[in-house]
Length: 471
Image (cartoon, rainbow, N blue to C red; front, top):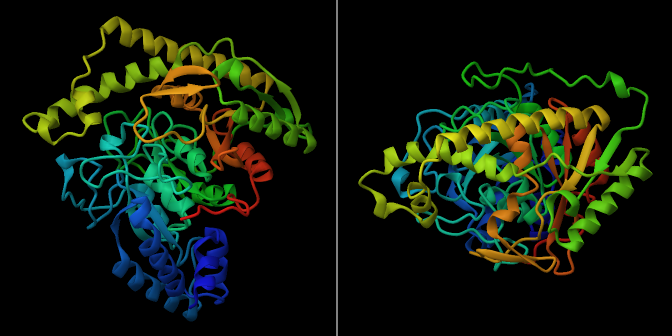
């Protein structure tokens, strides 16, 4: 196989690869080999892959090809490689969670999401990098090091699913599984120019993900270069598993959209007015996406979200209030093994009881406010990140002339973890620095179908369009 053939393969969508394997135009072995060559070529620069399952994947590919030739029934990901954030358990394969505390950890069974991708015919190819305990917006740790953004190696791919986003954007994986507690699939997706879905809380089982203590805020979700592939991944991942007590929605559960049957989709869009400061190029992208939706027949208008309050503060109080005691318990006596983010966690004081209860009240109020919002609108269009990919280790940022802390990166994503609403990061454009820009589509609970449909209509052709990271 020549280099042009490999390039065609490692930037093909998962859906297209599955079709080519099914129709015998490509073998699964060829697909795996092409991705292994790509990993060898670019991962030393990007450092997204932390555990490679090359030999196991090739053997699985040979088995997949025999199934094709025998005429067996094939799953929707048959013979297609996929990647897995290293917070998710993989049976018999290292799962180190970005921490020295878990160095050498090998789980006995797969996380539910991993098992479902495998049952759909997917072939696990790699585990991808993450920050310690998945608790930072930069992907760096003391076990497997720092991941770089393939569009600019001096910039971060985000976190905590930054290894996933970088691997997919760089053509090392066509589709993967990440997780999101405040930003962690959508933000990295926007920083690297791919798509990612945080579905309604409980739509995708959390079983087999670390840390388990804050399961009521975490979401496991699909990441890929196109919205179509994200929709495919979501169709495989969703539904109860009998273990996750939050995953109670039936696979075919859907939001009631009878009120808009035969009527235009009602879209409210906002940028600076709700999430400012926002980079002007990102606000321009949101406006352009709004115009595109209007051209497609949606009823579109600019809105304000006066009820928003301080969702990031509330979410961090609740998440850290639950996470800190758990981490302290496992860290005791091993404080020297912690990365800076782990040290920051154990040094965080427990919130005052009144502050914790106040944060709970804020979360409930925000849910109620969005319930009202989605009586008037079907979709909210807004930024994913208020800025493009940031320099590694930046503690302060200047956005539209205003100095903000690094936590501002989560301002437009955290409200939808706090409320459990479904939110989709859509690859849309590029900045003047040739850095990707994404836009975010949010819908009422259980209405993933609407944002996936609209996202597929407005995304750049092929997700990345004609541009590729120059690595």
